[in-house]
Image (cartoon, rainbow, N blue to C red):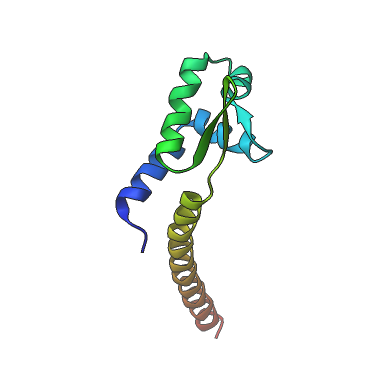
Length: 112
């Protein structure tokens, strides 16, 4: 199972709408801090703080390119989060399938 501290950091980073929009934007390819800040109407300093949270969570990777900082997706931690989510998705699907089977059986008994 995925280490709890890693999941805490990942989900904490994903809890902010601005950071989620940054990840969505980076799905189209790398971008500079300025390119990420502009659509959000945010200062470079404000966007740098969001990018740092994402970088510390392992969700993005930054690289200095000339005078700007290039940001790109880092998928490893999203894979960890998806593993955790998939486990609980399967667990709840099994429980709901069991509940559905119970209600189907009950309905069949009522119709007898």
